[in-house]
Length: 233
Image (cartoon, rainbow, N blue to C red):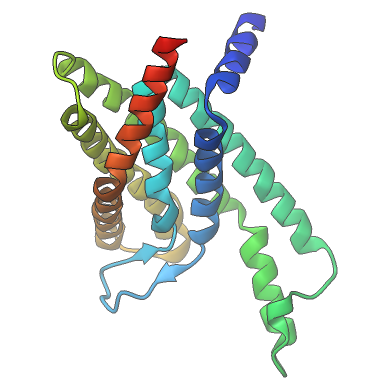
């Protein structure tokens, strides 16, 4: 056990603080914004604002996998998940503290708006449970899939290989993440149909993949610089 803890400490100290911060902040932001649905105007298409952060989560994991391997990336995923649960606990405590949110000052609606904001930040146990399970499963899947594809393409280097690894693993892992959450939370507690769950998972994965495509050159540059720095050390 001591060896595991010691290895984890070395890993955390070796990961660039900015990468670790982006991973943790994106996980927290992703789960918080998942409370807001997107009005698509299409009955069978359901999305939430968590997609604005989720692409950054998986791009950070792709960089970590590329530089440190899937086990290290998965360990950082669990750290991010643990800190997200800590933040959820703090948000919940804040929702119990008597007081008034600044945005609740609307004549005649203060109590309703204040209660809604408390519930939004305080979270609901099944949403936290669903998002935690979905992220844990999809993160590990993404990391080992990214690594496995890299092993198949080990004779090829450059942005093309990084892109293939990232695009395939991100799309499939995001689909699993969205589908797992939809089945655990949306279908059970909000009555979504299986079609809505599937279309939400698929559409979300496509949109998040598009984010990954746009920002993958930046991710590749960061990963390349990190590897060069480690080799020079």
